[in-house]
Amino acid sequence: MTISSPNNMSLSTLLSQVLNAWAVTKNQKIDLKTIKLWVMDLVEAFLYAIVYGVLALVIGSVSDQMFPPFDAAATLERVLCEVMLQAGFNVVLSVIVRDTVHNILSPIIPDIGHKGERTGTGTSGGIILGTLLTCRQGNWKQKLVLLDSLLSQK
View 1 (tube, rainbow, N blue to C red):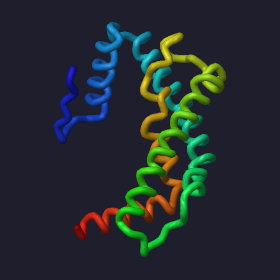
View 2: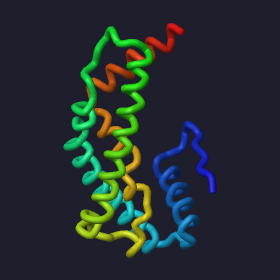
View 3: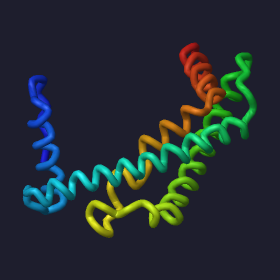
View 4: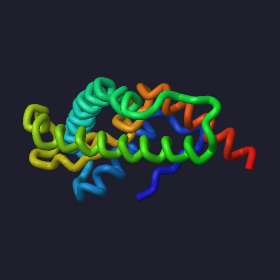
């Protein structure tokens, strides 16, 4: 199912299309119970976002501390190597956070949507984890800007 998005679409029309698409993927008819489950899934995703956000903010600076500080005079090769290694380390941190949430914290988060179905977008961390994990890494962001500048010169 696709969701159309003309510029003059009202919020209620958009929500109706989103709910309809969600119901189709869950093989459910749209009724009050379906709407309640959809809202509960959204609340559950919100709870997961809070957990992932807090963990990402707490450990986000660890990656920056593991690598050399920003050096504006660094060569392209060195900056490229540092950026790629730190990106890999960020993936390792992300896996650790996801495993922690799924194995330790998930039983604490109430299963209020579709019971026993913890496969929604919110349960994987996704954009919240990636964004907040890297936002705490000032040195890495400076290195990315320098890398972009060095690559643009080539």
